[in-house]
Length: 274
Image (cartoon, rainbow, N blue to C red):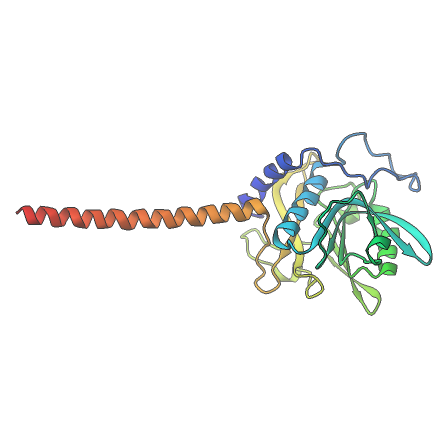
């Protein structure tokens, strides 16, 4: 389990990104055996909140890098233009002073992302696990991550489920973890951390939230950890809260010191009057 700051963050994200809409679920004609997703602005709250939280962490902690959320990406594979959609992509040392409608690699010297992430859902999991994985390996995307935020009614991929494809010698080394990174006493379980550094400036794992999906099963989110300390990387609001808490502690200490000094002065005044 995680502390309450994670759950506070969920409410913050709902307010900040209330109009978020995923386009990755729009076309699934090639998978006719899967029911069409319901009409609505989100496939699920856990999925959307998971995307937004990771985006917040990446943009807050790595401002010199570029994170893209829910865009079409266009690449060229064996002379063919490929349109592939990711929930998130992350580019190290890549800054633009403008926003994008889509990412066309041909406009950026055919640069590929250093990391791509897809959150599994009922309408996309087959494509995410198969076709998209093959394309990512062909493109040589260094790290491709897939995970489940909640029960998507596919038993093998029910959370806790996290899989990282890490490029080694032009082929993916696949690492799968089926456990969270903290036990019930909030102790770190290091074996459930996937080492994605030094390719990325962080390692990854799964966090179990205190919230539950409508199915009665717990929700999960992706954790990004400092590779040197194993500390969780935080969102902007979490860091601001930490700063505010530290300032309050400092102010409380100063007040306590001032009160003690005032008490000593008052005692000294009384002695002088005697």
